[in-house]
Length: 161
Length: 441
Image (cartoon, rainbow over all chains, first blue to last red; front, side, top):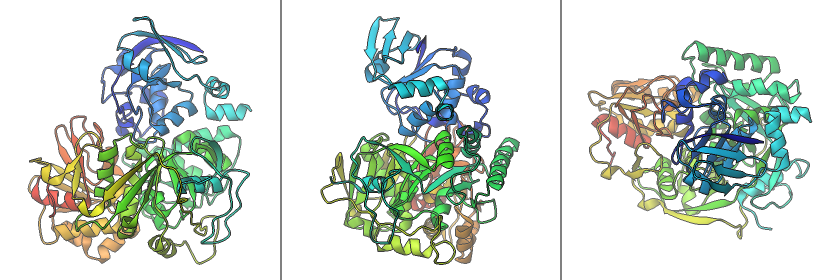
């Protein structure tokens, strides 16, 4: 499971209210949510993001509400992976449960700049900043989590078994 | 192996292990757990609201069970965008209502019929008791730690899995010990305690951990204060916040027992757990309650806390008194005490939101609503509404609001260039009268 794309970079404590403002929570349609993803911190994000891109955050990414609409919006906007120094715990569970790959890697999260071309190997945890040539090692996912992500999330994973 | 209070509750809920509860004072025997372990845990209650449940309902069918694991152990509360704020919100509520009817969900709370904000409503209805393990698709589910329960927020998929199987996986958390000492002065409340703590440890200071409150100061905090404190554990990144069970807790539980004395799936006996004396904590934070003063959290993080007397001249446009954090009867009483016989400043809109129908009625009977209306406040039906920028008090560009709610993130209550200042009901009421951030002292 390898992916490569352009990095979009944000700071610490990116909260779920800026990932998807509550004024759009009267729907749970992924495509509608994606149209407003990151709107309050980066109004141009939805127009700029390309399928396969990488989102990079600082500490405590996804803090705040339990809304699963936040990882849903990120995933539906085409983002292939989120790399951060650390994740808030509810967001961490929600992202994996809906098969949005996320990697905790402080060194990569700090070093990668906006616009860098970044590749991620979920099986090995290797993150490469192709623009700078730097390589980083995140903790790889155990096999069951790779299977869960491949299945498209917890519900599909459990019903497959 | 010594355990924290949280670890003991989790141990008693390990799927396939632990015995069922037998009595009030004796906890069942259970395996020993240590921080970092992954467990499958049995659930006493699964909660969702009109924002999170529709997503969970969509996922629910994928888990292969036609019916929820227990009709009495699922609670569905339409409270966020209710009374329905627009057509889309109405559709979401309709989807949840239909599911509740289809499944025969016992604990569905319709608008007007015993409704309220979930985290004020569930304890009031006696749906959570000491020793319970609760997950809810709302981050402030951690509120029930005030009752000596383990409760934590999850997302919609976890809620769906919980509704389907009655179990969830959890990582056993390490803990921070918060030792409360002494007694707070007048006008200093649970809100000031938790904001002070978040200011001290930061918005990710307790990430993945339990905040375990203890010490002689606990006795001086009312149940409403404890609900407020546990409610905002998530704002420090915590998995849960929890209080020891004392006479006050048991009296609260007894007074809110659902229908009669028969224990049922929804009316479980309290099970009292206490941390081992030699339990391990990542760190200890000591708070001298007597030394605290009213505080306010500046935009845009709940950790940007400073004493109200150092707030400077911050003119405000709106005040919100309510929410799952501070919409309880004692919050209403304090706000009314500050406002009685006075009037909200020109140019300020003050919105008061009793959190449940019962609180609304009680506030009416005690004359508090009259005080609010005479003071120039508008009283709203129970709703989360403005707290998350839903409805019933949205901020325009550049507007500033003092709110007793729990988050002041960018755009939380409306326009991306609006500002929310978090404070206690006493500070919010005093600010409404003064037209700027002010202390009741």
